[in-house]
Length: 409
Ligand SMILES: [Zn+2]
Image 1: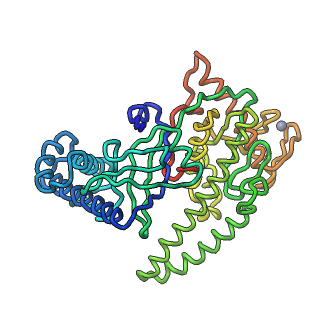
Image 2: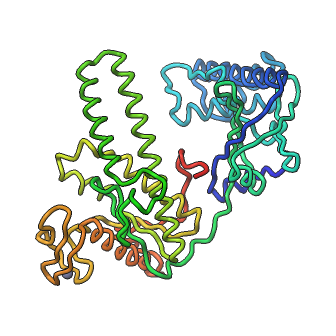
Image 3: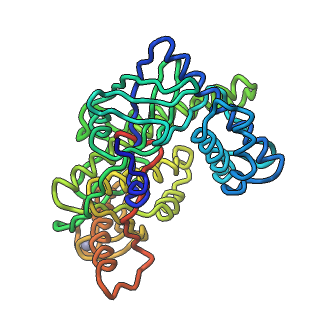
């Protein structure tokens, strides 16, 4: 038993681990009953909260606790507390609008905390509260997840039933490594449309350096083009079934981009770690304003994909103790990293850079990445120095939360 929730708050670097549970038939029924009771309780509390316009945690507890215990005697004190906390959270986090009472699905994910869930790590069993008493269940998971459960402090968990399969999604607290000094400078990463990411080492991503993955960026672009045409067709149709297909399409495209972003960020962080460098990325504002210039390409731009790349890289860098910095994007595509000469004329054609000052030539995205790497060094020095003025051009990271979909990667 190692629930260390206070520590989890302090350290702040968490990850979600997924375990599969293996209930016998009557345990399955007990878990279902627990889930339905907990969600019913949350719905009762939610209605009460909405009727009385009472959303504060303490006030809501005062209002709902005794009535919910009286109404649902099998709920138990801790499950009642959690139901109230859930409702408070739902209204506070805008998951619920305040136009009507927020409802919880009867089979929706059910939270468990340390008083309702304990692990026996040696036996690899978990003991869960149900209305008919505790059930003890064997659990299994991927190696990395099993290791995480064995090693790190465990926080809250969600009990989930998906297609008859019982899952426990457990928050674990990862130890935060000290951020190392970037002894050998920075890896600069230029994000773009033609190439999703190009590093200052000249790696074009996704590409050959990511083995066993989507080969080359051409695939992503072709897919986007095809999706775009399909979407236009469906939009013209405008029926409700067309709209449904539309939603599914964008979901699939998002998932694919997410996958590619995971691959890119993992690669970049590993490279930086291996070579004792930090990572510098352009801030989102800069990417947006730079990319907006290309009207033709606007439709293929998913600015959330750029934001996601930043989030993933920042999180994985923090996890690996790799310095991470966002830099000002101004002129990264027009400046010569060797002599510092800035001119639009340094870009004879979009993909090519040739410096008018010193003749340095190269792939435009690679040159931009070199500039970003240099700004990383400058920015890091600035934020590190005791006389730092806090230039807005460099935001340095020490704290970061895990991106919602970064669990286990
Ligand atoms: Zn030059």
